[in-house]
Image (cartoon, rainbow, N blue to C red; front, side):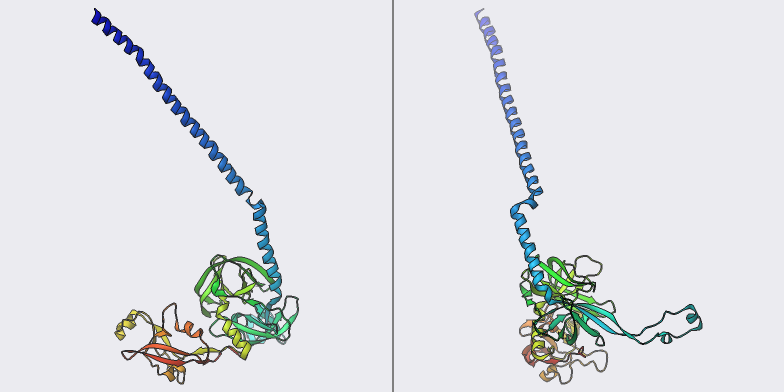
Length: 417
């Protein structure tokens, strides 16, 4: 009986202890659950607070006194810069004699009256084109695009910021770049300050000023530098094209009539000449870096003309077909070749190349130690030099490599009349 009582007692004690253990476990689980709930709620409150503050900050960013002050300072600097530079920016108008024709009637068409008999009175001067330019000297020297003053038979007038008209003379049209120089009589003109286009950075703010649409003079647009060292083929819409290399791309609006106007940095210095827009696209404009024309401006100031050096060869870039035909391994360089016409000489007689001994089927490999390739073209490298400079060409001649010296001479400006 004692053993049975002990067993009963043990069972009874175990039965009494079991509910106590379960109670403790449940209490512990409840505390954990409460802690988790508190953590979640607390985190939610904190996140909501932080998010609200972030949204509030975004919503009131423009009203932040510091932000407003910075924005206002930049706006003020652009306003001041435009005010200072605008007097140096001019509108260019081209006029020429245009025959006046009376409107053809159905009777004219019926009786087959020739067009030349439809002229109605004497010809009169009419506006045939225009663009923008800017003074680079106080004595009236203006630079613009060549295509703005391409018509040698037209008369050109410059309209300054104060509304005064000045007859203009075209001093030079550059054959290589879309660049030209005009001159008006007078002194004390406001001239721009030329900057350093080699130092421009992607994303920096720029300002364009020009005679938009040939009607809205001194129109100002603002944007950024969208790209550098772009290579494009620009066309006028009349069939003529021109390759422009290493030019600046910008999203500052450049409209018809802006051609030849300045592209400025925030210091008011000219870093480019606005020259082209991409057709069928928005906010893609191009400007010739001012560094490409600095030497040309100096040439015109000193001599009244553009002096372009040349060597006098006709050439094609190396290809796999040429390499195989000549049994060479060069993947760079240019081959000196003649053209289709009998007068299309490979080497122009009497030219610097002829004097230096260059011949048809020679391969020009390097100029002053730099390889000639798609980015370092011969034309580009020659344009970096001046008339009278001596350059060193590394060539492949009849199976052997050798170096020759070439004295650069002046290339005639065929566009000047």
